[in-house]
Length: 412
Image 1 (tube, rainbow, N blue to C red):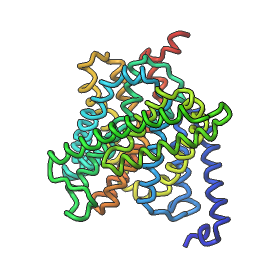
Image 2: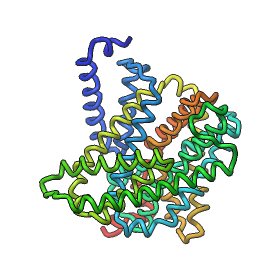
Image 3: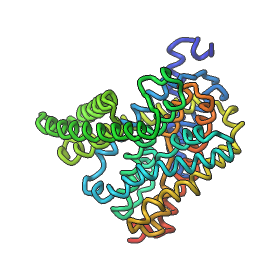
């Protein structure tokens, strides 16, 4: 047993608190370099893990997946509360195409790249492609907030709404492929025999997610408007909103729908129908979302075994580069060119497809299912996310200014 764990809860508490303090301090300094705060939390987790100085043993993939789902749900709910309904309407069509057709096209192209550089079979390549195909709302929202870009309303709405809507498609593809590759009876309740079942599962995820999110959001807005919430109840309001978001996420998942989509839609409707309450609770809710992201990325960092990842570093970097420079731009071109987006907007949408917690969380499922290529999928997904946060995040704002898309800089 690790000495830190054997010494008692007090030392363990001190170690965890120290890790959080170090990560926060590092995140504050990294912000000056344009690096994502989330990257620092992940690196601190890696340094504390089995290959780091502390050598803390952590291999609970199930716990990391559970925490990841809750964290992403809260982040999406918070993102919905911060998004104006008029912006969503502007970006709904292009975001919907990117979140469905774009995700599927990206997964297929990544599968082809993985087959060449990793020698994965098509099924394994598709599983990897599905896991890393969706952009991450937490990373996108955090980077946009940090860079303070002012994009054209349609462009900004397309990127933000896509990042919130594409998780269901990636989740369905990942779970469907796992069920297809897993012997009958070992994949829980999920049964997928072919394309028809995959489409049915996607329809259920999207349909139930939209229905529960809409009904839950409207009902919650009607209820909170009638509560005697005073202006000094900001902390209590934040707790109320967080509980509503978790409730809708859990109910939707239990019903067979996408809890992520429901949480985002409910947040949108709450902002639209109960704006005063939503605005009052946002500062406190922001603290909860930061806590969720910090815990999640620390856990993901602890979960990674760097010396195992290093064995695949060459092929993994090639997959990451293929995703960033081939698969994502091609999917964006396929979805946005027919809608009249110019080449500059397409370039920026392609580059803003940041990967974050969601691809790593999705890549945990093949490991839990004990698939032969599960560990390779997880290690490669980690490298994809790491490279995205290191390369795409810091260059996002400079690229927008270079392309003349930042209206704030244009006004200067």
